[in-house]
Length: 373
Image (cartoon, rainbow, N blue to C red):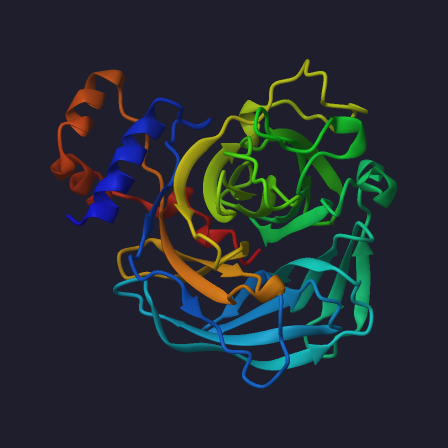
């Protein structure tokens, strides 16, 4: 068992102590070990890609936050045996979309309608576009709490995902009524929002980001916020946090957390969540990595199913400010039923028990059957 999988096994044992509703542990995320891989713009002019969605096969789509009025098509190949990227990922085309906002941060594909949802951070809007013509086919009624006047410092709607029969979004850092932006002492309060299959707002939950690890004397853009979410089931999510901080050299750190809305309070009716008085989402850390000054990962999507039954998970970085436009490939392993407390010691005894658990995984609690809905 390699080092990355040993680390994943350790995290899965920890997750058993904070299992989700329904008796399942959190999923396990492992790193393919490949590291960041460059994405070529292919002469299309695509840049500052900050949202990514899987469209099937080797086709993905992305949006950039630089004001370009295009949904970009990408060709990305994943080796289903290793979970690593193969070939040269590149942007292969574009879909002109005149109605895109000036700061497109998130994109989600709904296969049953062949349409794309796009979230605009400046306008606090979510619009739906035809996947063939680029024409607007509708918009989502976003709760008023997200209105632009409540957005602090360009920290509005950054996330977008379709899956498990619904649409999900979240602001990057605290809205004006919900308290201050993140600092070195405390994180920032974020509202994670769910819409059902008819695009009606059905739930909202409070989530606190990590504090900034260290404030940097050379920059003023330190931050620690939510940059994307992905549903695992109708109540469970993967949440991607991005931090920019560092005591000497400013660095980008990515952290992937698991949350379950079934264990938290719906805060839709609360005008402010800064004062507490509700049950916030509980976070389980699945993976983290410091990418130095090169990769600012802002978007993520599931990819194809791997040979071992796990899902590939791809993260994309924004090349704004002279950074790199990269992808990194991870692997998400479905959760197993939580064992009785008497068996915890046996699971923690060694990697052999983890291998046995993986061999017995079942797909009924994974998003494989729900992502296309």
